[in-house]
Image: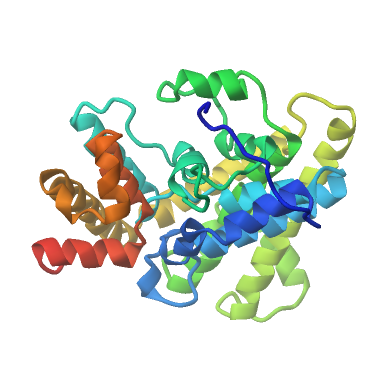
Length: 355
């Protein structure tokens, strides 16, 4: 059996192959765990804030809207969008960064990267069939997950991956759409959550030309004040609409003409988006309240890694039996990456006392 081989022995199915991929992803354990994984705010901090699950659903909705207008495959984009964050660790990007550090400090040079981990989840770590690992997804869905962000060639990817997926080649238009839908979704909902939490204000956002344009649109609707929930909602809605329509205007003809990198924004809007993202990074993602929570998350990841490397018998049976076949470093990393925020914190507290 070749690595990442897929099996197609299925009974008659009324779904198209990409819709079948989508359903397999939705019914996976890894997808359900996204409900309790951090987007920006830790899951237990409030019911309103987005999690990886709600983020993935929002990305899927935006991607479907875009693909329906570009005349490319909506179900394929939906499947890629729903799976694109399956490899994320607890505590957002900092969790993945610290797990990567732990592995490299132990001379496990390939480290950890969440995009490739998402690919490994659907090809190796999910166990739903007796005779093979993974979810048996189509090539196009796997390629879209693997090539979620550019550049596609990375030093830690096995040679067999390049041989099978040609990492020098751009992925499908649907995968490119998901990459942009991801960007649109997290900018809009992070602003919504950030303003709602008090970490950032619309006054802060006025440093961004793009945000000012959207604020003018909201003001023209005559919707309350900037402190109102409806104002936040209208801002998010107008931002998404502005970016989606701008993307369609820029991309539609390029996709129709089969250009190599057709999905995106014009240069002027790209510059405005970068400026807005920089403001969010400085004023929100680096806010002391976020940094404190993420620092606690880092300590939890470090402690879990250290403890499980010293005493592997704490591993659940599913992971423990893999120690005979795979490196302990990777098995431990896979287990930690699979955890929800609250599970990771509870496990850490059980090991070391309350964090």
